[in-house]
Image (cartoon, rainbow, N blue to C red; front, side, top):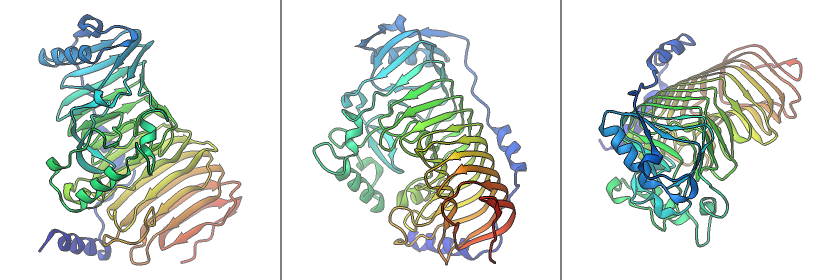
Length: 456
């Protein structure tokens, strides 16, 4: 049996089975948190100015970062310190045991010269594996790594450099290379042959540990990313604590855990040009080939401002997503499109299950407070019917929106076991949209002061 037929058979069984995987409810939250432990580091400091770095914002400090990180890791780890001042650099590659500490008053400016992010590295671009420009901060197959401090990491992304690559056509358009990569993923082209980089215009992300364990990002601010800000891929035990992302550029997602397990995003703030937090697991055939879900993701006490969505799952979820907990978050902006957003289609497919959201304070959003969309992007044109089940919403409140609930699934694959309680939605313009949604509990839920009626 070939891989496509096997996947279709398994997908059919998922669709028609009445027995769901074990669902521990909110009790599962503490079990996950016990497994997430920030790494610890040797008490040894390595000051980058001791390795030739100059705080003038002009001198290229790429080699100084490299030598300091290599020495720190080789000697057993410790803290590579960026002191107060402005330092210009190309790609920074973290290694095991290294905590890159960006001091208060320190600014690390990343070069906008694409050649500073070569040679190419093993990465993902929009959920498809390839070799491409290095992320601005990158690590591959390392453990116990961190970026901490109170300083600023400035990607210097703008319409004059990285952002113009998003254009659908023209001299700097990413479209030809992007289309080529997507086809390679669909055709099972070996990853070693998917080489891009120079003149491809596929933008690198800002921070990407790839196949790493025990990761901490704490206290720092990321500004004006070339593309996505924070994108751990195939990682385990990841903590983002009190981190800020700020930059309204194209595809500037804030934090995108991708095929990761045991992730905590706590006390972070997001103000970006796309989804604030978007949980992913690979795109289409390539995501199914890798076949690693994102699981055990915890989001606590975060603030979302501008963006396409606050807490989002999708759209690249072909490997599946399970066990997501979001609580005590504040989301509000006239430029925030949705609060809670779950998006896929029948090309992406994927199983999304066990999603818990409570105490979500939504001020103003443009569109829907809660959006479930099986028709994202291309709609229902593929062979891989998505599955969503076990969704719980408790104490979600909003002050202004177009929709309270805008939920559309396929008739052949309704959302199963959606529960909503203790929610109030005010100043809502349009009626709820509920297509093929199995709401098993609806209690103490009002729209514009009136209890909503769910027809069975």
